[in-house]
Image (cartoon, rainbow, N blue to C red; front, top):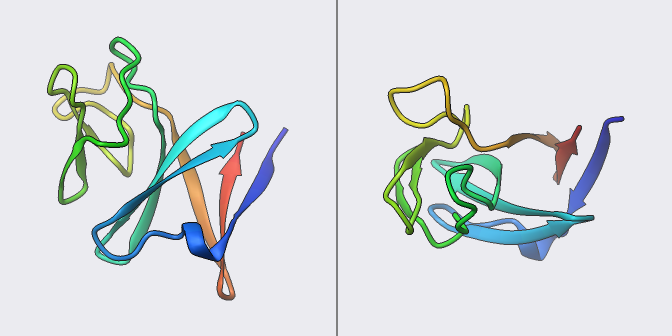
Length: 102
């Protein structure tokens, strides 16, 4: 079942920033890179470390625990299609932002 989570205005990150959201039982990192919003699960698929405070380099976030780098758009580990973090579609409707949850 698909549902949409409305992101409150005060939780929409400014350029180069990120915010932490809890949607039901999911913890999500919402990142603003060059005015594009990306939403990923906060849990690194390697050993479950939080990705929220990971280093941002363009469209890549690096896990603090072991240095793994994930593409924010696809969720895949850089240079691999076998290991990925869950990503969520971000929709902008008028001036409102929604995260689409499957």
